[in-house]
Length: 211
Image 1 (tube, rainbow, N blue to C red):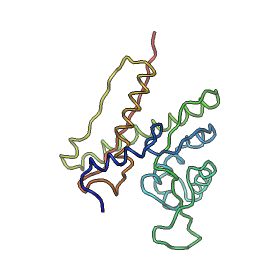
Image 2: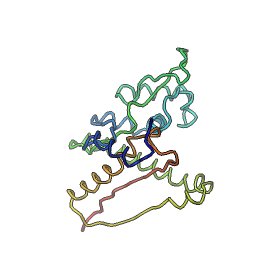
Image 3: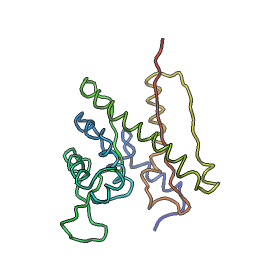
Image 4: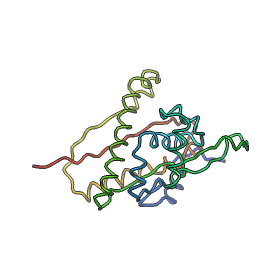
């Protein structure tokens, strides 16, 4: 039985999250894994599995812009880095001709490595993540927002704020935002109030050059 008091649920979840990884994300540390995930088909496949649950390569191919055989190859490549694994068939079937895949975590995170090779791999992945995020924003404007109910459309917002802060302050702000959002991420669909609806929050922090 789930309480309808969301505040009580959030307090329970906040006691069980990691301070350094409050979402329970898969932590990428291998530059080769970062470089592998920077491929648009692999990143799109992983994102789909994280959002929608187990799927076959054939099902994924419709959403990632690749043939089923190419999608299957990319999934096997992701599996070598532990990002995806064999998943259960939603209907409990045992047809071995259909291989189901699932993401090992609901998200992933990485930091900029200190080595030149690692930094280059992280930049590639960061660039692809930002590109897909911007593409999604454009898709939302053209395909999703026009069909939303007015009360949902009013919940959309964007901000562009320049701050003069130190690296430590920037890290503290990001940690504070993650701590604030973590209970809502952790509770998932099953723990959300019945009147809840999905809202995607896209955040970017862009340090500027100084003269």
